[in-house]
Image (cartoon, rainbow, N blue to C red; front, side, top):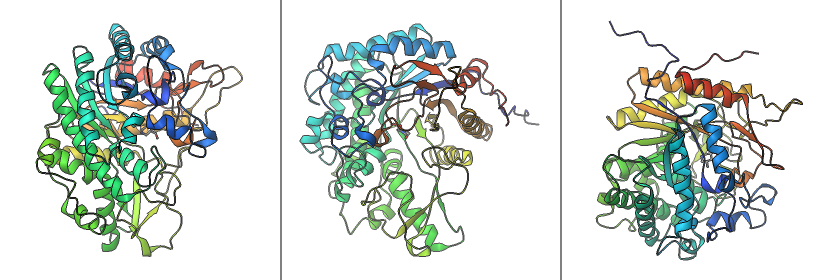
Length: 476
Ligand code: IFM
């Protein structure tokens, strides 16, 4: 008889982490030789972010990192995923490194290790040095080679003390929100450029993974984080809706996991985009470079995507949750309509559905057997406000975390090898085109004073981290 599984207790080695990214929290954008990234340029362009907000100060983590690490340690977190600002380390995106830039990350890592928190480094979380964008950006092949050089520099500097590495975060957003719908930096709206960008991001991942491995101890793990979509049909029995699912699944998932995990782009993707490009930018040997063995895969999950054939429903504004633009982030998919999944939603308008996380984990467990998985992002934005006594009570986020962590636990019981979970996000921060309007943090930040106050979700999550068991959730 198999052992009965305690539904809320996790394996002892499970990592309980939180995640952030450089541009969203660091600030100090003009200090110590850092030059503008595409997000500095974009956020300073009128009309691109809510209220014209920028990451100039963000939550000033660059100066307050010691306190932020102490906060994580007090909560009881065992892991922290952060990203490196390429423009701090290699201001022009090429050439020698700036030691003072690397020193900031060395100090951060040392502080984490001293407090028993395992660091996970993301090399690229959307902030391309502006000079590389001026030279063509991700649609330009050379950017992948520049990324490999940068990966090697960071691997040499931190490879002795950081075991967990992520090359790219959510390359889908970099390629399709950055170059097709234009709601993210650099704000271009060219579908062909977005497909080239996707390929060069894949190439950057492959070349970057090899570069890291050439300079790091073999024990270190190299992964990437995909915002793999769980795509569902409006009418499961309708063949046209199922074709729409195939198309969006290829554009959201297959375009990355095809070459990375299987060494080929899906034939259905090549066909669906054939009126836009013949993919001749994929050169001989690229797929071999991209298809590096991975040590782990990072999955970022927030909400499922619901689609149908476009003529099944009257055409309305696209509701795929990726921001308003007249330009679609889905090249070659004008015949697909997006629908709001029914159910309760977070402040982003994203439907809460933990079953999607379970489905995603089981999909990769089947498609990439033996590959350890991490949930490298999951969380929710709510309109949090301090009570008169200064405490921040966020029971909706506690319920969200409980639901999604329970889904992870169920997947582990179903045979998935999930090694850790990183809550998005440690702190309220700059939510890209939404500016500071959406609060994803487990820790509340007062943007006027930059003081940090752990919300009740942070305390709840800290208890989970310390005990390895999900505490009960308050019911209203
Ligand atoms: O804030 C972002 C993060 O930078 C990437 N993944 C999704 C989060 C919430 O939108």
